[in-house]
Length: 357
Image (cartoon, rainbow, N blue to C red):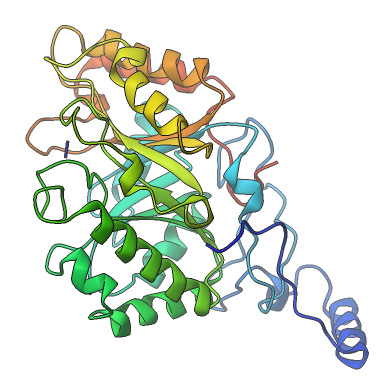
């Protein structure tokens, strides 16, 4: 496992005065509860609710977020550097099914506000699934995996029809989504890794896809560049893989606490963070992590949170809560779960992404 210049605000369409007047009259007639003015309102589902600081995302009885007209592109700027940290998780079958979310939420005592999933290149875009994640008050995080297409072919435009279709679907959805392309590209365990693709291939593919999204008006994406921590590949430099500040919003990192790797946060992540800071000042986001079962698991879990809290430039993390080569589920070991639950109870973790401030 193991953009063009940064948007500075909502890109609004100018409305002619008659249209604006008509809209205001309609709003007055319908009232604030008219589902036609809810964010990406869908008659088949209720308008989303928002929660205040310290509340559980999606809790009933909380005020609805301010309505956003369908022709106003979603502004992700408030989500890039929030006042609190993201509490993320990767759960089985998300987003096709949200069945695993209630049990996980109950186990850790707080609902996650990032839900990660892994999408196959040319596998389509799960619009309904992404809606389900958003309706739970969470940010969808799509790890986009080009298993059957080389980075060079993607950069050359061989999959442009598919990419353009996804970009249009994302733009039409008009909800925030984080996307990472070909994660852990500096490792050698994926077909898009360093043994199969050059840094130039990766950068060209990333920029090409990003430009297609921009052309489609998909400005509602948070782009997460996500290398693996340098520990398994200390001689592979990260700077050549960096697409550039105008193409990246967060500097992601994948790094696990295992039985053989360092069990101190700054020893595990520190070298990678220092190397990235030499060429990138974007916020960090730990896009995949967990602690391997064993005598150090509880302490390793504690270390993760101590490290997150010691670094204000880390905006959050995703816990890989699945069984894959090992059992990474935090609820599998009672004392580890108790530590995790205690640490996430801190109000700095989690918030409803529909009301980030």
